[in-house]
Length: 344
Image (spheres, rainbow, N blue to C red):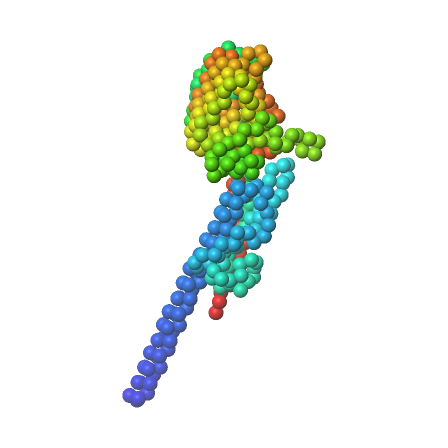
């Protein structure tokens, strides 16, 4: 009886020990799978975020298995497709995260220990207020107009003194400009465009100035056209006898620099700066110092007879051709893969 009891006890203890060992192994495996699943999902989401960043650099980005990035413990990549109903670009992004880093992550199913896939819908949108391109002058600070009336609407977060031509309006002490300041543009994209067009040298920070607003003038096949983008790293100043700068002049990007125009110098285009704009002298019945419009993060001071005329075709070409203030936002996110691959 003692022998039988001992054998039964040993058997029970063996079974219990085996169950405990099996549970321990199973829990360890479940823990590993849960960790790898979370890592793969985060990698897939990283792919979506990387796609959003890359689209902001190139709004025409599309293709499969883009920007595969490997790092411990796994890798990610993504696909992008574009549709453009009503002229607004919409993006469908598939992001994949895979473990380990040396596995094939280009499609599902694959030979990875763990894969997760997420699908995101994105679209482009303008992050500037309504009417941002409809004013001859838009300034967060005070605007002082000289003796020559402005040929266009004037919009200010401060006070406005001086005349505008009949039919145009003056808006002052605007609470939106007071609260938010001048809307920022996509300065990095504009800077790169200026480099690509040959007007800005990134290695020397030297700007070459075109004399025409248009890089590619509007035509029946391209009714919008392509403006010149003139990026200026530092204060912008032109002066003297009939010196002309053409294009969309972007002063300083995120850095606050000022702009000054003196004498009979003029801009055939539009001017953006987060600092102050000063126009001295010039103007008169035959000289238009700025044809297009200006945006200032500070004040605008027009001394003497400087003149500004609004040009709708210039403003809308900047908006539609360059997308200077276009951003990309995620409007939907879906985990498309409820199951996952697990190695034995």
